[in-house]
Length: 497
Image 1 (cartoon, rainbow, N blue to C red):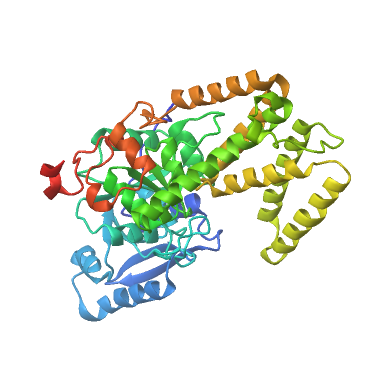
Image 2 (image 1 turned 180 degrees about the vertical axis):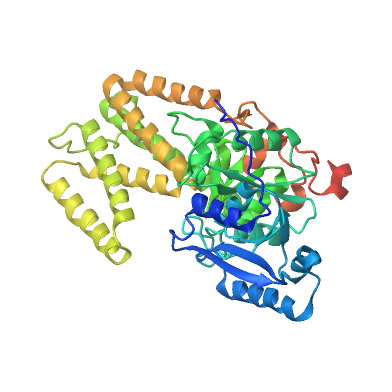
């Protein structure tokens, strides 16, 4: 990837009017209404404050100006004004900078910039107060028991929600910026004595190499740069809006990417089986969690293979054993079965998209109209057979049971392809389609991580953890796929392994 040449940064001028002219040219001072400024005189020296009105708390700005004006009443040595200012800027984070480019970047991130006439440095005061909602349970990751907080669009709140669950001095939150124009804050989170240094460095280098105007779509744009999937529909990163899920992966040795303005956190690296997990399994007893997991696996398999299998048995009834000879439509209708299934599958997709764009009070009414009127009339006119409606409904339910929305959409695409090849070539099309599907998954890698691990390459112990929800006291090792520095989550039980 071609890298842009870095221009030499502009140093802060000791002439405060030159700094003001720079701000007028770069950020539209006196043009953009949300770029605020204030000029004060302290110990006979001019001081300029610059800030964004929408990203700063007005009360804190007023308090800071009061403290600066009070300097005239208690101090007289103007030569020590920088030291006096640094002590009087009453805030928990105050830094000195010497570059105008950095001053602009910090101001656009919501910080206050304080210039002093005659000084070649400026002070940066972190008073960010981003607009946003309070933490609440994510809509797509509900649990019966468990915490009801979730990540928001505020990156500061999100790091705090993670820190609340892992109060370890080795938890690291590295802040990066992505986007030549957007300068979006991106936080890299990991536990320094667990996460593999090579993995952290690889992800960091990939993020720093991104050259783009901005990432208005936040984490999704970052995802496409990181894994470079091209046209591959399968998800290579896992998204979560639950801090407890993110914290659990940090303790396993994974790395989190938190993007400002997005409530979703990216977990890296991930495999196919990571997208089949749900927090509910770990909020229940191990036996119940295992039952939930197996039920989910069955539903996901049904979402992909039930319709192609039923179509195959409909086309070739001789494949069915005698006890299952009842499978197949009694009335095929006026349209070939394969066309019925594809049309109905597309109809389910229409309903899903309509539900997204329909106001909540009207969504229930729309569902009733679709289920009762459209479905019933389609059967009566012979467009769809009742059996086709039944299996399509089961397949659709399996799609919605899939925890990962991205994986459910990819599986839906696989189902349609299998329907087409089965309808065209019968049993040979079905077998070849399924074989190509598994070979394709086996060939994939996400950040050098095999996509089907621990099935391929096979790891018996890790695969057992996939099939069964092991009790926490017996699960005392971290997954080897992330190459953790510390393999044991319960050091006192090393001898028992």
